[in-house]
Image 1: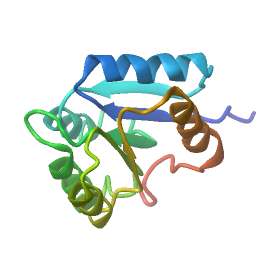
Image 2 (image 1 turned 180 degrees about the horizontal axis):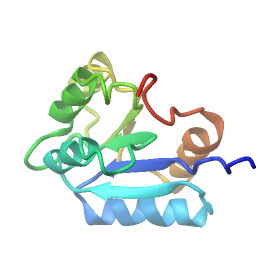
Image 3 (image 1 turned 30 degrees about the vertical axis):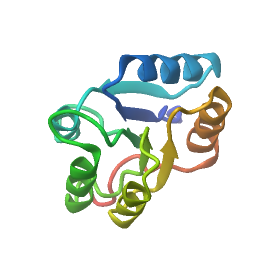
Length: 142
């Protein structure tokens, strides 16, 4: 018997409760089949990613301006870790700084979205990353 395809898990590193509610409500309104999970800072993100008992996410959406460990530091750790580097990372942050944009792409971000994000943009992003793009289920060879 064929197994049903696994529903992608999207992991959001977002410390702002209002931004998180907007994101979650938009995904819910889209009747997204994606599963959403949230962490509130970079330390919690890295702990979650390295927890072998938990399913790895298909996509990470990462805020740059977070407490304890910022998004730049977390992105560098993700890209330096052979067991995590395959996971696509979308930066979703309030910064429109050219330095932040350049550093994010230079350090391996797959996309950069500046907040505030309009609902239509969130819907487009959800469709693109949820329906169009093929995301890895896990690292090759694991």
